[in-house]
Length: 93
Length: 457
Figure 1 (cartoon, rainbow over the protein chains, first blue to last red):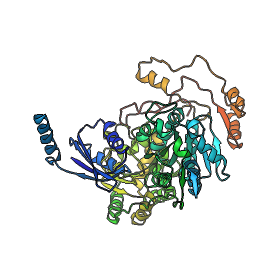
Figure 2 (figure 1 turned 180 degrees about the horizontal axis):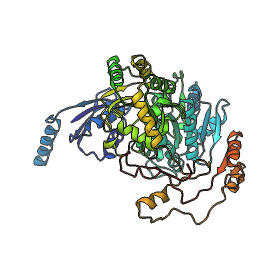
Figure 3 (figure 1 turned 90 degrees about the vertical axis):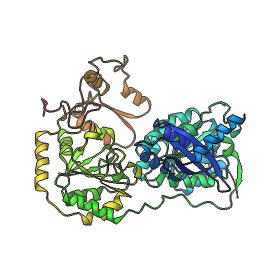
Figure 4 (figure 1 turned 90 degrees about the horizontal axis):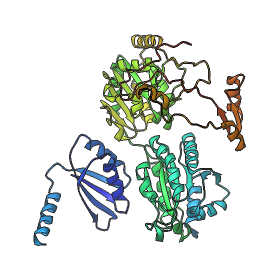
């Protein structure tokens, strides 16, 4: 999972997603939330690790609106929790 | 003080030191042009097509080394200019493109001459902005110039809706002009390792790219090559970094290089890449490029290091600063054996261009590829009508010369190049001439075809 800190404005998602889509690098999951009062957002991307990931991170760091990129190894629980939450919502709905 | 967005933008460009803008007015950028008409400090060049305006700005930026500006209107103006912007991105040229956009109230309604310029330009620019208020311009314009000029340069697009151009805003103080950020600091230990690799190498080659031109490092490249006796190859973007007739120059590499250049690269045991990006036209099949070489790679863009070839030493920095640090640590070496080997390759596999003695010798491409790689099925490689380009140029009020009918084409060409102002040089092409030698698409550089012998050299 990649955890990005980005400037919060309408074009940021396009910039980030465009990097992945033009390289046919599938993003399996996306979670984006504003960081309170900072004008920035936290963007979590669930991606498959392959040989291109290093280059993707370097390219992400070149985007002006991407302030920081952290790489988490497999098993980070944000998306696991989200999955549980979705399953719960489906169950109760 | 109050100013409209258009007035503010022109004022900000003036404060950046912009003195020439190329562009074309249209419905969505007329307020900008109205403001431009009221300044005497900026000269406007009216282009015939937005792509031309974009390339004019690009040409100015290549010469001045600083960001230069072009204007286009919304919709077709924007789509037309994007080819020049994409080219500036690939060649790392700092261009600021200001496009008009339909008023914000109409954005997203498929309005007249509306296209998503912001969305279109994301993959073609280093960065882009859609300006949402006149006040925002005070931040956006200096930021655009800073981004275009910092690190690896590139184009920045500013899309300005018409209502933002007309909106009045209070300006308390003008911001400082945007300037390039400080260059990244590099680690001295890495320079030491690079120097050690160069000193230990027996058959090194220096591979120079556009970064050397961008940072004015040509003289340093030449000094390094001379001190360490490094045969030097240049990419298209680096031509001029070392004089073409320098004894260490191998000329360009790759697809249409001289055979000896590609063969020298094949044998090298160390490749020193300076501001170059291992472009596929330069490397050929990349897994077979410099198969026995260690790689030292200097570049200001960290994402270029090990992108296509693993860099044994990679240094992120302004290549001029890195070379300045590297030069004193590199041993002065004659490298007699290696230079003799390269001289031997050069004499046995020289550059043989058919008809090189005649400046009019043409080199075609599509027909050649269809001939060679598509079973000779030449298709869509000829026009039924052959326009008289000399007459067309004359119709534009330009001088024009026809080398085909000139008594002495060399004299005519020299005269054309030396006279000031625009000029068209018409050079008729024999459709059957081919560009040899060449590396077939997908092949390794050592596997060049043709050009080994030819009649007239």
